[in-house]
Image (cartoon, rainbow, N blue to C red; front, side, top):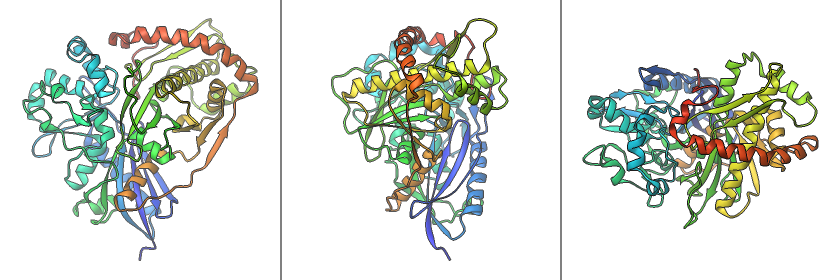
Amino acid sequence: MFAVDGYIGLDVGTTHIKALLLDEVGRVRGVRAADTPLTGDAYGFVHDPAALLTAAQGVVASLVRDCGRGVAIRAMAVASMGEEGVWLDAEGQVRYPAVAWYETRPSKLQDHFVRTFGEAARQASGLPLKPTYSLFKWFWLKEVLPAVWDAGARWLPISEFFAWSLTGEAVISPSQATRTYAYLVTDQAWSEELLAPLRPQGREFLPPVVASGTGIGTVAASLAPAWGLGASTVVAVGGHDHPVGAIGAQVEQPDQLLDSMGTAESLWRPLQQLPRGKTLAPGLEYGVTGFTVPRYLSGGIYSGMALNVLRKVLRVEAWDAVWAAIEREPGALAGPAVFLPASLGLPPRFELTVWGAEVEVHQIVRAALEGWAFAARRVAEQLEEYVGSPAREIVAIGGGSAIDVAMHIRASVFNRPLTVVRDAEAVAVGAARLAARSVGHNISVPLRRAEVEPKAEWREEYQRRYAMFCRQWERAESFGHDWAADERSRIGNHRPGS
């Protein structure tokens, strides 16, 4: 006998795959996770779709087995990283794996892209011109592996590939369509002009766009037992992880700002309407969500990705000792180090400058935390300038928000309190809420929130240094908008796991 209904949210992220079980009263029954399998081919990093499915199946099955006693799993939805998907043939066989979202392999075609896709396309798509978006990866596949491209018939983003694998129904969520560069945000339709050079029929390889939280079918009976699900479990449309994380963190009002601090960090403002007559600043982007608040404006930086690189370069065995050393330092001076992260409008890169041989590891890491905080404040201000009003509340989620010293630095740099959601799995919660909506339930989830105040001994110095950082960052960003700058980073062109 089942006592309550339950909903599973699956978050397929760059670093981890996480499954969360939410019951009908908004209580999180449990979370299970596994590392995201990563591999490569002759051209760079890819995700093997079969390996992703196997890892996710194990995570969901263990979640249901360990935490699902007395719970009827009514529905499941999947969120994932954007800008990456699976190339399938007409029989549903994988013809090419998912090129990792941060891969810049199309950059060698940049001259063609710049000539073909100018500022008008950028404003229509809502995205900056950079080689990581799906459209440019499709052009790369057609150019470099034409037989593979010709053999394909359908492309699905990771989140919708999971839904199709479980149900046989192919759709794409608005938030994932937005991340392709081929979806016109203002018209909410595919761009036939941008897609025509790829296929004579234009968008025939792309599925219909369906709102997140829509049920598209039930789990295939042959697959249900291995996943720990029933054949009556509804699979709902999920979407891109950052917007789904906003649903989980309950950031759904235009006067809120979400700071989603993952492998990539996105600062995200919900919008009812896109401001008209305004040109997007470099690095900013807008899109559609398919949620209650239908549009968003965002910008961001590469944060967690760079932290992983620093850990390897600096040979950090445990972060706790580093955080404690930073906390003990008087004042707000990081020492002789400056860190300049790249915005998400650029390929992944960062610049670290260190003076002298006596610099300690914690001073370098603190410089990185400060650089991210300065850059995040500048992005938040750009969003405010574009929207025309300040955010009433800034809500932080994701792995970076769990680092207390990082949040104290950030609050001091922003010179205002920040709200930190202590429930770490906001994306999975958002996916579970979308699953519940697919069967007519709108569940409110009580979240543990903490207010992080600026530190008096840090804030004054940070306000002085912020203007200096903005000048340095603006020069670095201007330089970096040449795609070739991806190879000019002081530390190099690193990727997760590299």
